[in-house]
Length: 486
Image 1 (tube, rainbow, N blue to C red):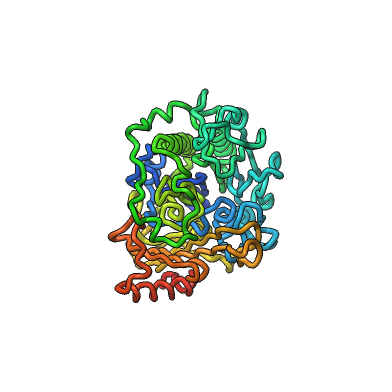
Image 2: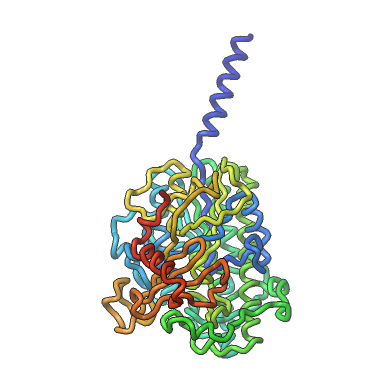
């Protein structure tokens, strides 16, 4: 009897060991055009679901995109390569036209036996000629792909431009409004909207594939314009209570012309219009947060949370009036900075925050590291895994963001397109941001975030900061390789 009992205990211990040895799952949650505006960042958006994830993960307070536009950023973090390597600098180029042999982040997991699927927007799509297809999606990255469509796509005749007050111009059935600041306080329930359908489809996949290691990528469309969410979310943000970004005298005048993309400031919007934008944007953030929570709740309901790495990011940041700017395509803090939260099994820094620098290009090597997969040797990011246990340790010296203004088409090298093209390259340290336009020929910027977190005073030409400029110039020219952790 004792012998049989001993054998049974041995079998049970072995079985428990086998369960704990199962590779971690991955749930990658991506928001579109969402700045670090969540409550856990001390910002005004009501985001209890994302805040809950931060309570069991590590919040990165200095995380940055590599390019403040959808397609270049997504091509970068899904390949683990920077824009200079992918050659993607606008919303039309497909990265495989340049690098056909690249093994993407989801593809690595698929090649290693994971069930790999995406729901919603991961790679960019929405280019008019590709509507009705998967756009710039990468078929070999996934086993299954789903593109839910909600009534926000069918209610396009109700969506109006905030600037003109007229119906927003859009090709029927596409949902593609480009840069139009447009909005709709929608009728109906969350489930009727595209993001609501994305959340429910993600939950179905969690239920049906919980018995095998999975990599599930869920891409929400909000808060990208048009800012569409059910009416109840607008009620969370009374317009009269919303603070507007101020543009002090001399702010824009002290910056290189190439740095500013919105003329006149605020597109000429008055304060009432600006409050409409901010209300609609924050409402969309809260709507997205609710859908985010539905997926997290399903993860927990299925008993998967303890063995799943959960990552929340946005593709880039967003301006809400700072410097008179709106939306993206700058290398100011508001457009370059992104939310990043990682919750991983066994991490020691759960519920903490770190001020160490992180980049979206780091997500690929981090997930490969956490799941024990051998990442491609050509990745251009750094695994953030050490920070999940020791968030105050010494880390990389700079985070890099770049953008091109003033040209049509062409590659990142700027040899095609308008002669007036302005290439901006920016490096963010824990204290400073330093930016050059066309290698300094069209101006430079230096901001000290200890005294000027709003980047109002450009110090680049002030003699007392000459040594700082030279140091950061060398860091910018040295690039990401020279800035890596020692």
